[in-house]
Length: 313
Image (cartoon, rainbow, N blue to C red):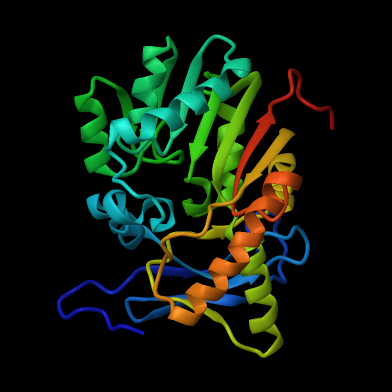
């Protein structure tokens, strides 16, 4: 592990003794860990709800510093993007596709994007007549978005006061896996939705893919860990099943989960030539399986709905 540079502030962390998604007090170790700034961030899997996450997590200023301007240039989306997050032309086709996907759930057109980054989706949404608002932690990203004339709050779901029931759609793209408490974040989103509103989540389900599932099983069998020598951006590692349970736990109904698989390409993180070859070969098999059967993907789009009436106890 690399040491903390001289003069740098030691990382701020917390250790979890329970699964925050369901409250289970006996999460079991998962054969994976991050190593960063001289610290180890081991993973866990909850035997009750299937949630996976980090037993040691960065918090406070350490977590905030991880999302500097550099993150949006190189590390966002697991470092698998071929461009920077502020490249409007590159992301317009994707954003247009997302907004078309949102259209059946438009309602009054009130959209909140949590983790709005540089505001490109918000910009394209306003061009289509949406009443679009953003929420973003990174100061640099907020300033860029506001420079485009967009309404973006700086902060988090916990720190910014937003009226409940204000939105027809709340969207999180590559965000939910980064928040300190995924259950609390989902519950806050549920409160922000108007009755009948929709929570749309898009992001990685990396440990669900064939390569990572096989790796976790093999490493676990021999008592070793998959070691990721990079910042521990992903505090949570979702699967379709654990995402579904999380949505139901906060009172939302899951309408659909659409899986996809990133094709073999530029590897993320530090891997040997042999590791790259093996993962590339498995991914080549994984891609058609995911496309045909909506299974074993490494990314997912989830659509959940808030009931028109609260369930009776």
